[in-house]
Image (cartoon, rainbow, N blue to C red; front, top):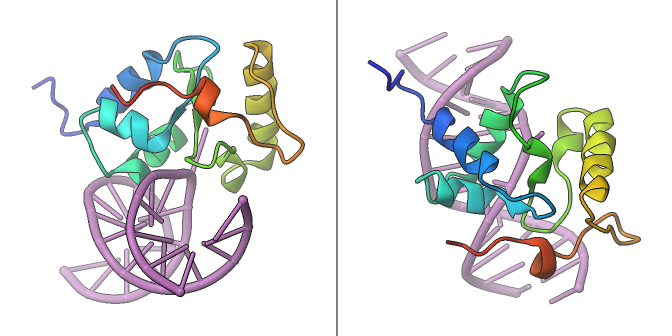
Length: 107
DNA sequence: GAATTGACGCGGC
DNA sequence: GGCCGCGCCAATT
């Protein structure tokens, strides 16, 4: 019934759990969503997000501390960086952020 | 219905 | 520390 056969709702819920001013990797979100090892599914779920969704998708970055949104929309990457900086997250000269400082605990 | 791609992660060199 | 290859599942062609 309410399962809808899609675990994407779980992923969206996990992303919504990321506190402001912090970021999480695709693998972490997958783990929080109960999908260990399915980091790619997280990317698909966020890609399917509609413009205006109540999901802080900009707080999701790859394991390298960089933004992968550019692979889908080069313009979206700039928007993501803007939102992260607005939350107090600083980017390095290489366009990457400090995961050891902003990344959430695996749990 | 099969083959390919894709908002990734990790181990190995 | 950076680059290469494999694995994973879903959506698209």
